[in-house]
Amino acid sequence: MASRTIFQFSPSKTRSSSAATSPQRAKQPSPEKRTLPFTTIILPQKRSVSGPEAGSPVKKLKEADEAESIPDAQLDVQLGSTDSGNQLAKSRNIKLSYSLVEAGRAIFPPEEGFTDLLGLFPTTFAAEVDPPYVIIRVCEVPPRPWPLTIAGLPVLFSKDKWAGAHERGRLGRGPKCLEDIDLHKKEDYSQVVLQRAVSVFQELDLRIRDIFWFAGFWQITVPDDTDFKLLPATIGSSPAFYRTISEAPYQDPAALRNKPPQGVEYDDTTYTDSPNALLRPGIMLGSSAICTSEGDVFKSTTSGVLVANQEGEIFITVASHGFEQDGLIYHPNPHIGTLIGKIAGSLPDTDISVARLNPGLRYINETFGSPDNPDGQRINGILPDCPPHLLVYDKLTMNNPFSGSCEGATIALGATVVAEDGKKFKCIPHEWIFCENGDQPVDGSCGSPILNDQGKIVGLFRYKVKDSNSCLAVSATNLQKFGYQICDGEQTFV
Image (cartoon, rainbow, N blue to C red):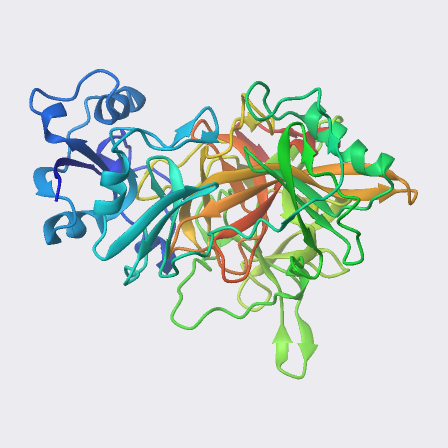
């Protein structure tokens, strides 16, 4: 077994805090209580004898935090030993002496680099980079929660010797398209590239439901009766994989009503009852109740961001599917809370609506504090949904009353596609996000803002794929397309 030096850093020790005045939740959701606390850095012992060198993961962490970070723990271990296993069991992100991500692309480890991957977890018999994941194949899967990333790539564990981590679909058997673009080596994904890719299918008179760029390959969903002999084999010098709608059905989040999982606690605090109440992104919202054979039921979602239209009118964003036709919005729900507003309009094909709150209610674009970031995060703008602004594998965060504070990573950029007038294709930008293992978002997270580490909003949560950690988010750039901008500071509704 290889000898390594482990450094462990707790986020709460690498950030300044004014916890006495920070906006903490009145109730901490139970998934947040299980969040793994550490970033663990593993280095060969010869690289740590004289302290962290320039360019090392330890040095980069200190520079990123703009402060002298002090490890919670530093120890020498044998990879694969009980000691190393115990330390990694507390690690959300594991960093090695090399990265598996470069400029938004998955890369292979250097020579001898697989030694670390194979020695991280007991019973590991294989490790491989299979974008968008690094797969650790083990005889015994470690208990959840699992680490989110290893060397920058989202990690999955499997007992299967051959199965891939991501069901890409089948390769197209048709022409090579957009050969003037080289996404394989020379060029980056962009909205221009996306529009040209979608135009290929329109010109071929082929319908598609969605198209996503996984930083190395395309994945596209097509109708069940599509002839694969007509589907492009490559687009922009990169392979194109296809799944049919029946193979990758969209979930209907409108069918999800308030049925909390047994044993899960969430933040159903009525924040309007607080003295000098100030509402914010991440509070629980409820629809009107409907009488059914199972009793009165309602839908639960999460409040979004504060926005203003071109006339200066202010609104908050909400998930369209989370409310009934009356458009009434309750907080936290119609059974124990109060009516706080009503939907004023919607953004077609995005599942985003805007709501006007009752006069006198105050709202601020700052998230609740969390164990990682006690002061919360100020939302200060909309992030463009393509490189160099947003890269595949960029880290993201989400904070809502169901999952609490939840970390994730972008795994694909693209769009859902709708046909206007039955012919012209229109792109609705979206992203696929991989969220923390063991602390998965639950029903009700819909509408939750997803942010980067600079406080820019990337998207709004739509749903999580069943039996997966993949989550679909609608891009926040859709707000700009409909004339909305992020509000700064606190606003009072009139």
